[in-house]
View (tube, rainbow, N blue to C red):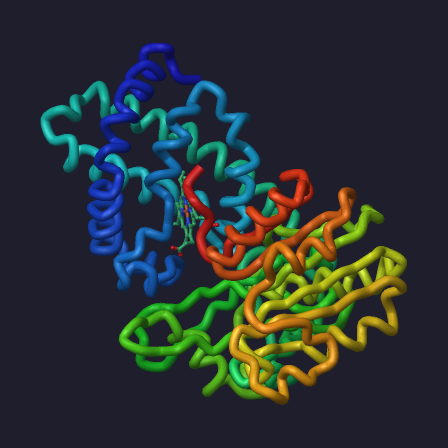
Amino acid sequence: MLSQKTIDIIKSTVPVLEVHGTTITTVFYKNLFEAHPELLNIFNHANQKKGRQQHALANTVLAAAKNIDQLESILPVVKQIAQKHRSLAVKPEHYPIVGEYLLAAIKEVLQEAATEEILQAWGDAYGIIAGVFTSIEKEMYDQASEQEGGWADFKSFTVVKKVPESDVITSFYLKPADGAVIPSFLPGQYVTVRIAIPGERYLFNRQYSLSDAAGKDHFRISVKKERQGSSPDGRVSNYLHDSIQVGDSLDLTVPAGHFTIDLEKRTPVVFLAGGVGITPFMSMVHAVADQTPERDVHFIHAADNGKVQPFRGELTDLAQKLVSYQFSFVYKNPDEQDKQLQNYVKDGYIDKELLSLHVKPEADYYICGPVPFMKALITCLKELGVEPENIHYEFFGPAMAL
Ligand code: HEM
């Protein structure tokens, strides 16, 4: 428990630190990775190289500090972040290292304003916040290793099949190298894939949604080959597409993630996918088809054109399993052949007019795709009278700060 005095110090210094948020984050990462380069085996160094402040760690600590006397109010967000941490094998021993460099960054930025008393208070507060994270993560590690077929950190999988789904998306079918069973997972969850790329000093970690239902003898991930220019963004996806072949190994964590579908529900469900944002919906729609095929399902996909769109055949075939099902897609840049495809509805975007054909008051809406796509659709749905609690969405990439 923190003393009231410590709480008061924390609360009075948060606003000052927030003003310097970016500087603190920059100083923090620079010093952290200089002293502990081994952590680059965990962090997404493409983000770091690009100078993106994607890891909202420092900002989240500040936000948590604001709620230091009522941490239970931020537990849902902590759980969401903890899922990501667990899927990257972040461990309790990492927390003191991060704490040390965060405190040092605060000191460096505030300079003489950072009195011993203030630093002590922040050290205590960080300890409490880190304690909340590590206890939730411990539960998650225990659950991951105790479930049937589960394990704690990374485990070797063999690529048993590689299937091009479109010009830019390829599926990898993965089986445990030790022949063990595949653990169950919730439709919509992701795995972290860790790979060593020849010539690269550190390991790469990337999260990919599972794109097939649970209960199979394999996991399937479907990876978009990102354009690789001067940015290091597409390093992993290009390596997977070009160099990883059937028979090769990939290290995986147990599935994680909170963006899942409630399979107990019987409400109509509308999936709205933009580009490769379709992947988590593949496991969701297959799970619905397997478990509640009577559920009313609408699946709308927005893609650039027919050549880059994945899973057209697979989604069309689901009509044989689902009792009440509509699959449709729109293309931004269709050619004449694309326009003849079965289930093609229009050029351009998913707009309010198209959505209005699928809006039902009791339906649940799932949205995944690029940020502008999601923002536009959330706005449209709200304008069409859909209640916010029926709109579920997942930003690809790091979650925002609290
Ligand atoms: C991701 C907060 C400690 C490693 C994140 C995210 C947040 C966060 C907000 C983004 C979540 C998302 O992408 O969905 C925190 C807080 C911490 C903490 C508040 C301390 C109380 C740590 C520690 C490590 C770590 C000790 C390991 C050294 C990572 C990594 C990611 C991540 C590798 C994925 C993003 C990336 O690779 O850049 N954390 N974190 N975090 N965290 Fe933490």
